[in-house]
Each structure stands twice: as structure tokens, then as C-alpha cells.
Length: 77
Image (tube, rainbow, N blue to C red; front, side, top):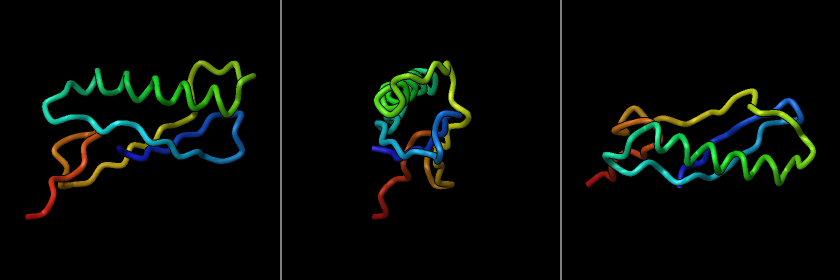
């Protein structure tokens, strides 16, 4: 799992959310759809009356040793 942070205008502070990490070789757009769906469910649970169609921001941590966005770096041998 990968911990991302996001904030919507309805929230006083940003929230942390765990999303599945992107498997090696997986399409970035397909992974973003998974992350978006997770975020949508989390936001709806936190703020059920918020009408926003988009959040203010989403922070996806990226390690310089990771093979791509949404992926964790390989384990050291």
C-alpha cells in the first residue's frame, strides 16, 4: 500500500489515505483511476454532504529510486 495525502475545500486539514501501489508494468492512467476511486470513497465517508467534484490537491509520494509514480522502490538486497 502507498500513503497519499489530499485536501478538499470542505476539510480543515489534509487527510492521509492508503491506496494500492501501482504494480510493475501497470499503466499509470489505470492506476490513477484506482487511486481516484479510493479517494472518492474516503472523501464521501469523511464529508458526505460535500458537493465538490474535485479535491484541492492530491500528494503522491515519489521516491527517486522507485521505478515510477505510485510505485515503491525495490527492496535493497
